[in-house]
Image (cartoon, rainbow, N blue to C red; front, side):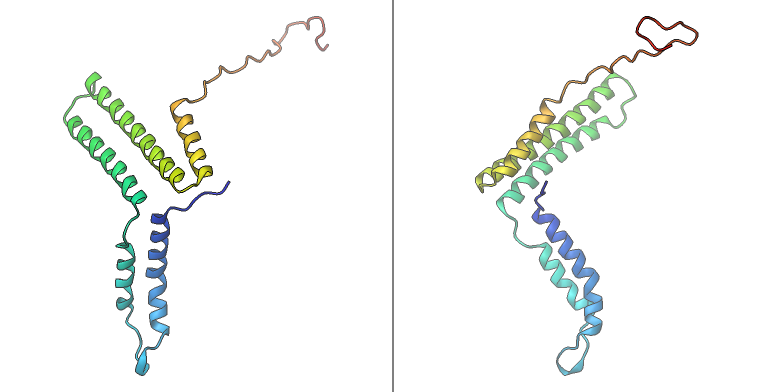
Length: 160
C-alpha cells in the first residue's frame, strides 16, 4: 500500500539532510579565489526552507491540531490540583475524547482536501480509517476449547 508523504515531512527531511551535509560540502567546495565556504553560511538556506509558504491544506490541518491542542491544554490545566476521584477521571476521559475528536477532524480535513485535488484513493483510505475509528469492529468472546480432563475415560468417538 503506497503512503503519501506529507510536505512537512519532506521539508523536515530536506532540512535535516542540508544540516548534516552542509559542513562536509563546505569543507570540500572552494569558492571564487580558492577560499573555502564557511559551514555557517550554508545554514541560513535551511532556515529559509523551513519558512517556505504553506499550502491551504497544511494551514487547515495545522489549525485543527492547534485548536485540539489548545482545548486539551485548557483541560489539563483545570486538572491540576484535583485529588484522585470521579472529577479527575471525568476530566481525563474528556481529554481522551477531545483527542479522538481532534484526530477525526484532522482525518476529515485531509479527506476533504484529497477529494478536492482528485485523489480519490487517498480520500477513500482516509474515510475508511474514520469509519474504523467511529465504528470499531465488535470484540468477539474467545472460543471455548474443550480439553480432556485428566483421569476421565474417553467418551464415544473420542480417542482411546
